[in-house]
Length: 149
Image (tube, rainbow, N blue to C red):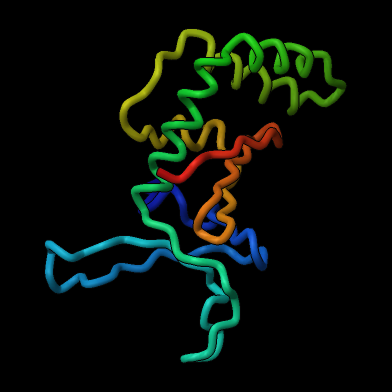
């Protein structure tokens, strides 16, 4: 399966709960070209704002994942202990997922660039609040807040 963009359907508006969509600004001049994500409900009716949330730059989303994963590496012991407790779950699927999480983190090193397979293996969604705050939700429902740089 080929994925055009890892964020499709995974960026959520913290204001109204809708998904964000990808937009390209100034695409005719490559120097000014910018890829952003904005709430799908921003302009439900042309020219009328329906959602007040701000857009977010594509690069910020990639960096949020890198920062989240590296924070998990820094706190590896905490995460692995938490997931080891999950291995006692009655739910066979949950146990499988916790084993997968532990495997992803156990021997991992900090990353410098985006890793799509890693992203899909641990991230459920990214929620954007007013373009200033991001909450990254892991597949185990844990939330990690990221600063926008």
